Each structure stands twice: as C-alpha cells, then as structure tokens.
Length: 511
Image 1 (cartoon, rainbow, N blue to C red):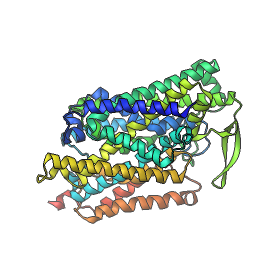
Image 2: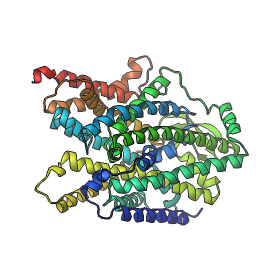
Image 3: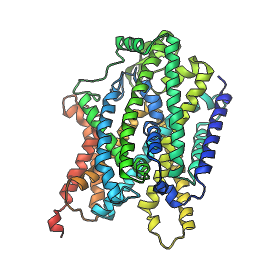
Image 4: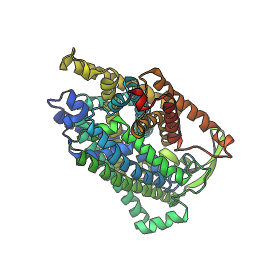
C-alpha cells in the first residue's frame, strides 16, 4: 500500500479536526479553555472519554497481547480481569469523588488538597499529576507515532523526530484556543471513528475466515485465547490482584487525574456527570471485550496464513514469539503488521484513520489538562489579579507550547528505550507516580487528621515510590517467588498513607 496515500488520509483527517477546532474555539477565553464554561453535554463527554480512556495503547497493545506469553500476564482474554476492576473503580468515582468535587465547586481537583491540608500538599499533588500524565501520555503517543513511522514515514525517508514534531504541532494547532470545549467535540468524533474501525476489522476477519462469532470463539478456546482468570497466586496476572488493581488504577488514573476529571466537572450538574461516568464504565468494558475478540481473530488469521510460535532470545532471555513470513507479530506490532500487510488497502486506510483517532483523544486532553494544572495549581494564574485576561492568555499559550516541547523530548526517550509492550511501561509508571496521589486523597477523605503545611508532606510523597521500588525489585527473593504487578499502585498509596499518618496530628490538637 502506498505510504503517500496513507499519509494523505492522515492530513485530511487533521484538516477536519482543524475545522472543528475553529468552530468551537470562536470567542473562547480562559474559562473556555480550562472547564468549557461548565456547559459541556454529558453524553458527548461520556462518549468522548471512551477514546481518551482507551487510547492508542488499547487499540494496539490489547489485541496484540492476546497471543503474548509475557508482560503483565495478559495472555488470552486475561485483560478482562482488569476491566472487571474498572467497573468497581468507576462506581467509586461516581458516588464518592464526584460529589466531593461538585460540592467544593472545583476547577482543579487538586484544590481539594489545598482546602484540606494546605498549599504544600496542594502543590505536591499537582506536581505528581503533571509527572504522571506527562509520562503516561507521551508513552501512549510514542506507541502510535512509532506505528505510523514504521509503516508509513520510514518508507518516505522521514526521520522519527520529524514525525513526532509534526504530530505534536497538529495537536497544538487544534487545542491552542478552545481547550476543553474543543476536545469534548473532537474526542467524540475520534471515538466514533476508532470504534467504527474496530468493528470493520472484526467483520473483515470473520468474513475472510468464513466464521461466525460463535465459531471463532470455539476456535479461540481450543488454543487457549479465551482464558480469563489467572489462578497462580505468585504471578503478576493473579486474578485477585488484577481486579483490585484495576479498580485502584481507575480511581487513580481517572478519578484523581485532572485530565479525566476536567471533562467531567465541565458538565453543569452532578447527576449528569455521574451518568457520564457510569455510561463510560459500561461502554468501556464492552469495547475492551471487542478489542480482545479482535486480538483472538488476528491470531486465528495469522495461523491460517502459516504463522508459528518460536523461541527467540530477547534481552537475554528466551521468550515465545509468533513469526509469520519472517515477521514477528507478537505484541504492539501484531495488529498493524497483519492489517497493513495482509488486508485489502481499503481496510488498511480505515485502520490508519482509527489508529489516529485513538492517538489524538489521549494526547490532546493530556496537553490541555497539563496546561490547566500548571497554570492554575503551580503558578496560580487565576489568582493573579495584576494580570489582564489578555496577559493570562499569553501565559497560558506559552505553557501550552512548553509542554508540547516536553512531550517531544519524552517521546524521543521512549523511542530510545524501544520496548515491545508499552502497556507494561504505562502500568509500571502509574504505580509509582499515582500512588502518592492515591495516598493523599485517601488520607483526606477517610481521616480527620491534620497535616502541617511543610516540606514533610512532599518528602513522604517522594519516599513512598522509592520504598515501593525497593519492595518491587526484591519481592521475588523476599516472598518465595511472589511478583508484584498491578498492585504496586496500592502498595505505594499505603506507604504514602502511613507516612502521612506519622507526620499528622489529630483534628482536636490542631484547634
């Protein structure tokens, strides 16, 4: 398939986004950028957040992981263990966190920490969000940019750094003015195209293999792809860990994340925002199941083309990989390799559009939310009465541009890492960076104790990830081959909670 043809569709798609951004960004101001003037439609927010929650990582890594034999233990349909936890997590967000945010009328959710504990905890929480979202968003961006680079722009002689810079400029152009108001609409468009591409790919493979869904599931079961529950207690993929970990990942990476909650609190009424979250949870889990079905179908298709598993030495250890015509199709490159090399050009074009649609919702929202958090939480832009609206806007645009540059540097770092499964990296990073946020918010909600507004709060939040890392790397030796996986986030949060407890004082003594 011609790379120039594929790239022309990418440019056309971007042109559509610019038109939407121009229309929604007219007469915008700082309130429009930060919270969409608190006038977003809950149905649009819910649907658009599906794309943000899934991202390019889900689009590529989850189907690819169905046939994988490594990573976080997600072989087969095991990722559904995490998805079950998502449902629990979203219920906590809807009925515990959202009422709190609406009652306090927050623009930044980290203002809760300011009101509860003081400025140090507030700044610390915002800083950990900025680190968390920057690393997570750029890892997701790297994955999709790398696919586009490998299958399109390498063949055109375009260097990776140029590809990354161009895509970031595209995102900058359509988020520069409208902010949240714009991305509510662009995310809805992108989610629609992503899900449409997913369904078309599923239908094509079923038709090509002359199978019904039931027959395909029967074949998947015969080769172990339908396995959901991992009962090995020592494994990273043990089902109890995965379900509990999935719940806390959702609470932390959605409920305590300014990017995700910025869209929720842009809805006028609490009830509508809660409907948004519950709708998102149900649809999200359904779409994840469809991605896993697609993954199984991809490997059935590969088998029909003569693919075989082989033992390959990777980073000093032997792992199983599926080889089709001398091409490794395990992991993140499985989906694009099969679609772009073995499917008709029309399906390949649909795949690229769907992949780009999976890329932008996670990237544009992250860039907007990081700009908002830095402006509001770190430099206190909205409190600067000495600055006019125009001066505040100039500062906001400078911050927005600066984060784009930081994104580019982080993407180049992940490019140098060249890891085969970005989803593992994202979950590991989340465990270390969202743990202190989980500990801070939990301590505030579930205790009445007070914290002094001092450096000790920041010290505890920095020490907890270090202790978590030491425990993680030594767990196998210390605890009879037990491996810490997705529960790292919970352990980190507990360390933070205990540390805050040690430096706190009772509410009575604070009076």
